[in-house]
Image 1 (cartoon, protein in one colour):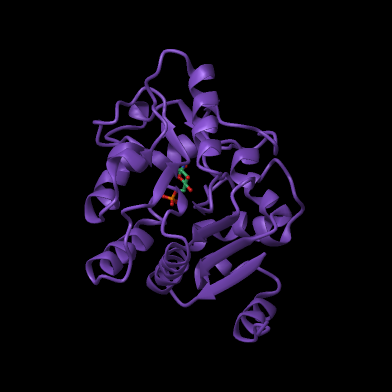
Image 2: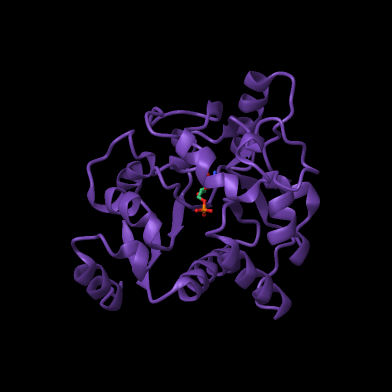
Length: 257
Ligand code: GLP
C-alpha cells in the first residue's frame, strides 16, 4: 500500500487527479470506478480543469459508480447519479453511454446486482477505483461487519452513516435506510484502488485502514491485501498514523525501477 500525505485538501485532490489523468493517458479507454461523498469533489474539479486545459480526453473512458441510495430516482438532487452529473460528468466529454451508476429504483435487485457485476466483467474489470472512506471505515456502502468477499448487493446503512449523510438532506428522516453498493470483493478486483481521505474526522478509520488489523469492522482495512492500493491523505486525516515519517520518506525516495 502506498501512503501519500499531502499538506491540505487541495494538494490531496491534485495528486489523485494526476494519478487518474496519467492512467487515462496510458489507456484512453480506461475503466474508471467512481465514488461520491464530499471528499472526491476536489479531485473531480481538478479533472474538469485538466479536461478544459486539453490535458485529458474522457471520450473513451468508461465509468462505474460504487453505490446509490435505494428509493431515490436519478433525478433526485441527493441521488448519487445527480451528484456525479453535477460534480463531474457535465464538466467533461464523457460519452453518456459509458456511464454506469447503479439504480436505486429497480424491481428485482438480485438480478440487477448480478447485471451490474456482469457489465463490469464485460469491459474487462475496473482499472482504477476511486474510493472515499466513511466515518465508520466503510468503502462504498460496505458497513462494518460486511463480508470481505461480498459482491454487489443491497445493504442496510448504519445509524452513523445515516447521521453523517443527513447533512445533505433537509432532515434525518429523509436519508434512505438502504443502498445498493459494489461489494468489498467487487472493489478488490479493481486493478488499482485509489482512496482519498481528508480531515480530522477520518483520522481514526484511516489509522485502522493503514495500520490496524484487517477486519470486517473497518471494511477499508481489506485494502492492505490489495496488490496496488494508493491512499492519499491530508495532514489531518494522517494525524493518528504511527509511521508518518516513514510514509513521507518512502514517497520522497521512491526506487527508480
Ligand atoms: C458515503 C459513500 C462513500 C463515501 C462516504 C464518505 O457513505 N457511500 O463512498 O466514501 O460517504 O463521504 P465523505 O467523503 O462525504 O466523507
